[in-house]
Length: 171
Image (cartoon, rainbow, N blue to C red; front, side, top):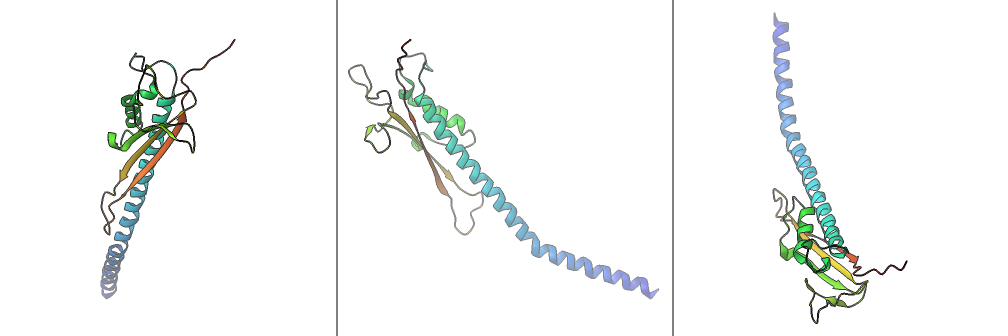
């Protein structure tokens, strides 16, 4: 009869040891899981900002028919460019102030117009065939739980596309 009683006390000691090990390891496992989730969120926001800047520049550089059936070329349809940026980054809040649009003549050249829409005077825009539209998008990444006073940072991407306003095709 004494032998079964010894087995029972031995099981209680192992159960208590398991509880202590679990209490020591569980916070580390939670921290690693939280880190994996936060890195995933950061990569998601980075990919969203990158693709939204690309899509905004692609929309503004496109030739062809206009979205609103007006004579305004696509590079001057700022609201539609901003909508293209926001629709691509569908789970990321990007306000108008964080979407900047400007135009230049190419890498390292001067800026033609530093705001959207470009100035329109004497029936024409200063944008010519071969100029570029640049779309600059910024989003803020903030962790769900701020650890050690880390409040996040801005993720910024910029994309430029060549504008083709008129293409002459000779047969």
